[in-house]
Length: 208
Image (cartoon, rainbow, N blue to C red; front, side, top):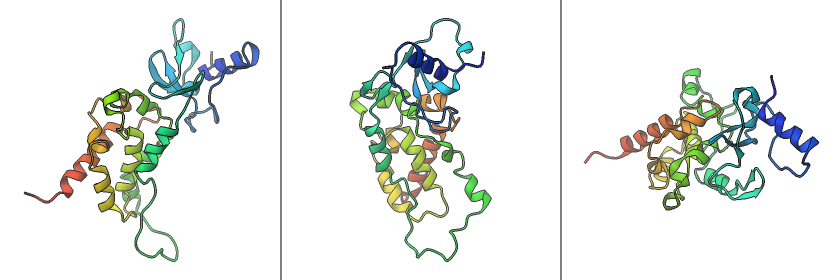
């Protein structure tokens, strides 16, 4: 009764087909490597109990990515887009002798975004990313990480971040379908955070 889909996949590989390929690492929802489409909805195999499904379970690779083998997809394009938003702290002042301090209230502004495990469920579920005409859209996962640094009080790269995000394939590429928020295994309010990025961009522009 406590078997997860990941356990089922492992049993298939151990007992029936040793060539079955899928990714897994931690097995308890922290690494995000076992993301796949389960009965049409993207999620983590380690978080889905077999008993929660009534009959047959259709397991497919994440949509929108090139399939390498079985349930393994090529995530290089996903991580290239992730790197494009500068997913690191930008500072221009000399480093302090101890650390760059931050209050609990300041940390709380982006605390939810830190939960992202880069499983790509949101990107694979996004209708914009699945549309060939808008495939250049950077995607919700990258924007969640952009939000994380844009609202970090220690970051000093706000101007360049806003200029980077103020492009059709960046923040404005989001069409607010909410699919990313629906499937996020860490329950991050992805769409809301992208909306806050858009608002920050808008407020940074001079009044006409």
